[in-house]
Structures are given as structure tokens and as C-alpha cells.
Length: 353
Ligand SMILES: Nc1ncnc2c1ncn2[C@@H]1O[C@H](COP(=O)(O)OP(=O)(O)O)[C@@H](O)[C@H]1O
Ligand SMILES: [Mg+2]
Image 1 (cartoon, helix red, strand yellow):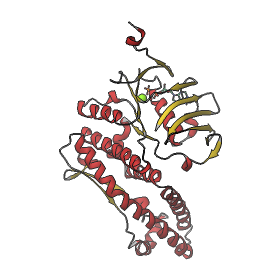
Image 2 (spheres, helix red, strand yellow):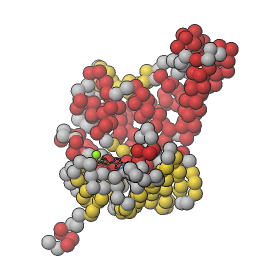
Image 3 (cartoon, helix red, strand yellow):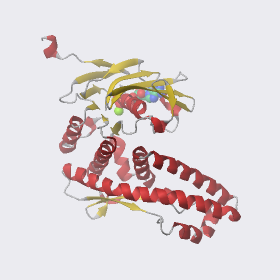
């Protein structure tokens, strides 16, 4: 995949502009607050339609009502124009001028690596579940669909539990078991490959401890219906569904211990990078093309081993955009970021100096 052009209008602090990116590595460097992270966030949104902000309004430049990003994406030998319009709580997507839904955008187009990824390791189960669900939703449209049906069913069932509608439970349970079972089976299948790829990546990062990924399941496909019935009284009392894949965790074990409780910050950072490389490899396998890689703040990575892993990874894809407070070595293009603007640095050899 190649992102040949990125346009933004009223996006956070970015000045309206169209940037062109060559194949290979583009290094973006500049001081804090220059807009480097915002640029990668805009690129990720335009490439995938995805954003993890809680309110889309945050992405719109203060004082403005609407924002817009556009990606010119080359994949499978053809060019498509992907546009995202953002308004008050609204997101409108177009591909080549035609309105589409998020699931219709190419799902393997980008991977975003950032310092906050350590939260995957040290943060709450919901963050790890989010990583898994986001990845599986990109690997399978069916998974994305069933997951959102499942989440809706949980909310409706919770409302029924709070209203004490004991008589309606068998209907909700039936729907929950059907959707939840499919989700659990899908997760189990995908985890086998994800476990292998993460372990390989963690070893490639020089870790001497073996990384293992497992699901901690609150129930199983075989016992789901039974487990729901067994906890009916408790769920009615609490007014919440406590059994099902929305309560699962992705257990990360490093050596003999759970990484979230025992890993050092550095080990955790390594595990997070391993998860991102596994994501990249899985998407590449599934879609037959390597995603555009967005690496935010490689200079925040002080460990030389992890830093060179990041730069090697950037060199392993057709195209990467790498930000930092210093210039990324070996870049095909270097952009200097300042106050939301990005200016190409001239290659001194080319200018004849
Ligand atoms: N909606 C917005 N409107 C205007 N400015 C914003 C908006 N959201 C964030 N910013 C500004 O963007 C800047 C941060 O940019 P960022 O991309 O995180 O910088 P960095 O180069 O350090 O990665 C901050 O100064 C912040 O105030
Ligand atoms: Mg930043």
C-alpha cells in the first residue's frame, strides 16, 4: 500500500495542505506540539476510517465546525481517493466520490505504532480486548458485524435486567449465546496465529523471555448457555451481564509471569511493539499487501535495540511515516514540522551544496 497524498482541512492544529509522500520512509521532525502526532492521526483516519477519540469534535480545529481529510491510496495497482468529513458527532466517508461505511474502506491499509501502546500491556483488560477486537474486525467484516450485534444485545439485555424482566431473559440469552459463541470461536482461531507472530516479534526484539498470548474467557462456547442460566439471579441483582466475551481478557505472559503485573516498563514496551508487528504481519498475510506504517515519536524510544527494531520495521514496508524530535535516519523525504505546517527539507547533495 502507498499513501501518495494526504490532504487536511481544519484538522486539529494542522494548516490546510496537501502533502505528497514518496515510497520508502518519510521522516517528520519538529518540536513538541508541532502537529506530528496529529498528522499521523489524520493519515490513519483517512486510510482506515478509524479514530479512537471519544468525541469526533475533538478532531475539528477549534473555532471551526467541520474538518476533512483525504488519502490518495494505491493498492493492488490502482488508485483510490478516500475522503472523511467530520462534523458534530458525524463522520462521512467517501471512496472515489461514493458514500461508503467504515467497513467498506480497505481494512489492511495502515498500522499505527505510538508510545501510548504500552497501555496495551499495563492498562485495563478493555484496552487489550479493544486491540484484539479492532484487529479481528479488520481481518473479518463478519466479525465486526457480529461484534456490534453482540454489544447491542448486551446493552439491551442489561436494560431488561435492570427492569427486572426475568420473563424476557430466555430471548436475550438465546441471542447472546448465538453471537457470543461465534465471537469466542473466532477469537480462539485468530489467537493461534497472533500468539506465534507476537512471540517471534518479541524474540526478534531481543527479549530472552518467551511471550505467550492466551484468552482469559469468562465462559466457553460449550458452557455459555448453562453459565448464563447459573448466574441469572446474580445478574438480575446487579442489573448487568457478567458472562460473555465482553468480559474476556487477553492474557500476556512474559516468561513465567503475567506481563501487566510483573514486566518492567521496558519489557512492557517491547511486548507492545511485538503486538503491533504481529498486527502488521497478520494484515499483510490477509490482504496480500504490506500496510502503510505510521510510527509516532521514534525518539521517545530511548532503548537502542527497540529504536533500531522500529527503523528496521519501517524499512520492511513499502512506505512508512516516522515522526520524532530528530530526523529519522535513511529517510527518502524529510519534513520539518512547525506550528501545524510541514516543509520538505532540501537534499543538500541534490541542490549541489
Ligand atoms: N481540535 C484542535 N484544534 C486546534 N488545535 C488542536 C486541536 N487538537 C489539538 N490541537 C493542538 O495540537 C497540538 C498538538 O499537536 P501534536 O500533533 O500532538 O504535536 P506533536 O508534534 O508534539 O506530536 C497542541 O498544541 C494542541 O493544542
Ligand atoms: Mg506527538
